[in-house]
Image 1 (tube, rainbow, N blue to C red):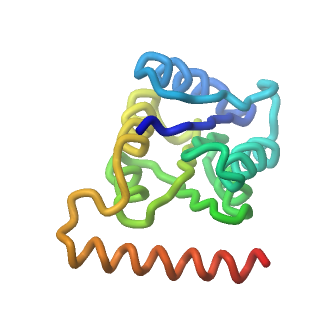
Image 2: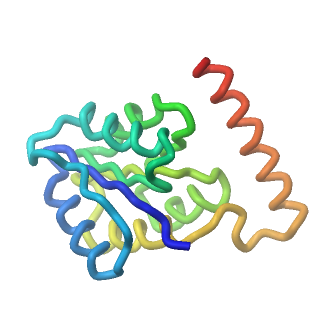
Amino acid sequence: MSKKIIIAGEESAFHLKEKLVAFMKEKGYDFTDATSSPTMTYIEVGAAVGKAVSSGEYDLGIVVCGSGMGVNLVANRYAGVYCGLVESYDTAKMARTITNCNVLAMGGNVVAYDLACRMLEVFVETEFTEGFEKEKAETLQGYFEQMKELDLSLHK
């Protein structure tokens, strides 16, 4: 199944967002660039992607700002959004396999282009609990269900 992806980048990370868009085109991903202007703020970027993933219109989101922190904080304000701020290949993979994150946050002033593309790829192409034995996978699924219940209780 092809995952629908939405991406947006804040002004200080516009250069990284552009590299990620080119990479996603090259890979043939089904994506939308929600960056309406190269001067978007981290609030606008996090909100655009957070709303789109929260609504179910998109399966995954990618957000970038200078540090990744601002867009991460904003995206995580939306119900059903689980945004992970990553700075390594391993944390990008674990964001999917262990916590089932559906939005990836990166810092344009922190992460090199090559690494950012590899992190995006492993995030998109890895599934929740992939590679875990049945018992551990069930434990992780149980944790995720608890997180969803907490999320629903906080977003009533």
